[in-house]
Amino acid sequence: MNKNYEKKRKILESEVNESQYKQLNINHLLATIAQYEESLSSAPQSTIVQQLIMLYNKAIEYYSALNDERHLEYLMKL
Image (tube, rainbow, N blue to C red; front, side, top):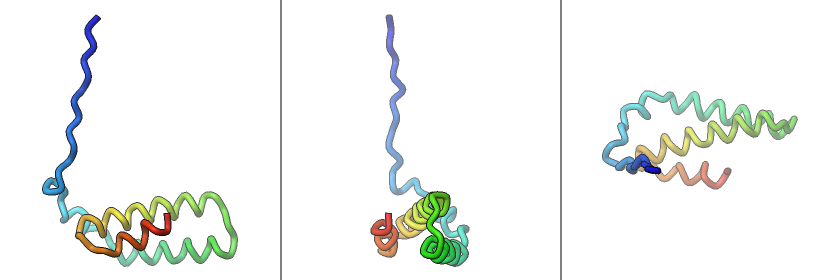
């Protein structure tokens, strides 16, 4: 019996392409987050929470890729 395991390598920070994050319309993303947060306060639903978590993750990835400290704001919300 021969077991082979796929070796996975970590992605280096230098391999992250900042241009893909710059294409993301962050203003639209932030407006959508605000809209969902407002909806959540008026009518809490699990689907809204799931959407917010997804949007928070996108904001965290965006700001982290640009070395912007604002990613911490969204980490605190998770």
